[in-house]
Picture 1 (cartoon, rainbow, N blue to C red):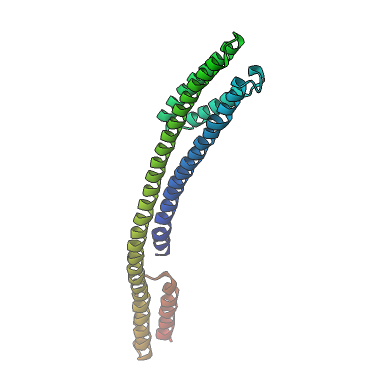
Picture 2 (picture 1 turned 180 degrees about the vertical axis):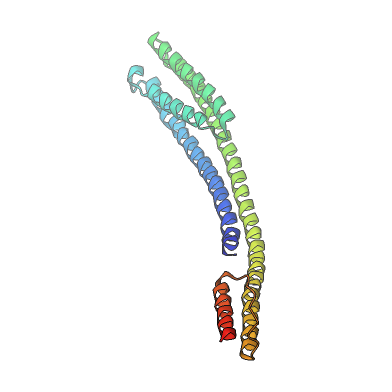
Length: 239
């Protein structure tokens, strides 16, 4: 009875905990992906565009700029996100192609400046860089939206597990209480009935019916008592 009660209370709880851990890890992974995608935005929208503008404006030479370091950093983060099988992998794939396009425009800008292009020509090309960067940022936003959808699905699944677990636990609690009551009644009957028979047997012996013998009870703990009573009756009969 104790093993059944422990199983009824522990097994469903352990299953529910495992399921909640799975959905919790999935939800946490989605949040991490969203944070990683968000960290890409300032690299392109602020740092890269400001760096290329400094180059176009003549505040630094193209070779001195950190634009390729920024592009490499963004590409490495994108590749890591895609490799992690994020929910927004299709959007990230498009973003990676746009990043390659953006790199091509930056390379073209460097070649154009080395060929002695005018400031207006460089500004025109920088505008193209800004346009591609805007498309890249839009795709990042689409990726974040996809991650939000995945996070909502994970949250709904987790809530469903919690509700189901609550219903199952309530049903199991009711069943456990009923089972415990029946088990207690059965155990009480299993002990009370053999003891009552032994009392009747002792009464008959006291009344002089020395040939009476007690039947062996089903309860293991009472078998020695019944056996000793039988031995006592046998010895009294011989005396």
